[in-house]
Amino acid sequence: MDLSLIQKDILITLISLYQKHSHPIKGEDIADVIKRNPGTIRNQMQSLKAIGLVDGVPGPKGGYNPTALAFRELDLDISDEDYDVRISRNGETVTGAKVSEIDFTTLCHPDICHAVIKLIGSAKIFEIGDQITIGPTPVNKLLIRGEVYGKDEVEQSLLITTQEMISLPKQSIRHYMSAPILSLPPDSTLRDALHLFNTRHIHGAPVIGKRGLEGIITLSDVIKAIDDEMPLTTKVNMVMTTDVVKASADVQLFEVIGRFKERKIGRLVVVDGDEPIGILTQSDIIRVFPSL
Image 1 (tube, rainbow, N blue to C red):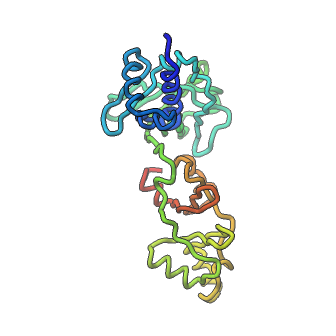
Image 2: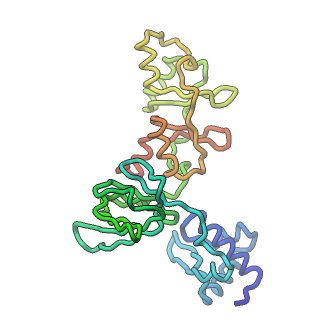
Image 3: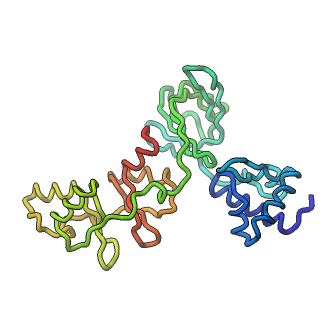
């Protein structure tokens, strides 16, 4: 079909925004990107809906989704995107396999939910009874946990009983962090740190000086210093941790969860460029999905 230049611009922008955010895109967002009047976008969307290139989603959180026909019309092949859906066994990521497809074979049974997990790689490396975790998947950010009860080594697939399914948040960590940031200067004392912790009901704070982020001090650091008979007049830069775990404010929440376990930390500093703007703690994560 013959599309006008503005229709192609709208479709390309819609697809780009949809792949980035995985939710319906508002006409105003498209208009802002291509510098067009929102009314023009709405008029063109009616035409694109009529020929089956976009779907409209009503409601406050609604907008427009591109259809499969839109990808074909623009010669965009989304099947070639290199996105690995990982699979973990007993808490360890399996390097010899990844998931290509998930088929639910039972959904209506009140007690069980079975699924067939098709693999790229070998099913031989899995055993009956393995506890596995799959995901997150690329679009819906779905995380699935279950137990292997069978496998097909010819079709390279696993049969699992699903125990838990979680749709991970798609928003960046700036939406979950604590802000504005509560910090201490390097020349503040342990007494100052305790006062901040007690009055603001927190267990840690970054240490920020003229050079920017210099470290982080936690309640555990202060308690250890006191146990070592260090006076409360000791400067925090004498006991703080200088190897600070940081994450960009635009990183999605599920991407940083593993850092807490890997680095054995209770909090990380959220930065915008080089500027600390907030703190993300384990408690913040648990509030979002307590089962993790």
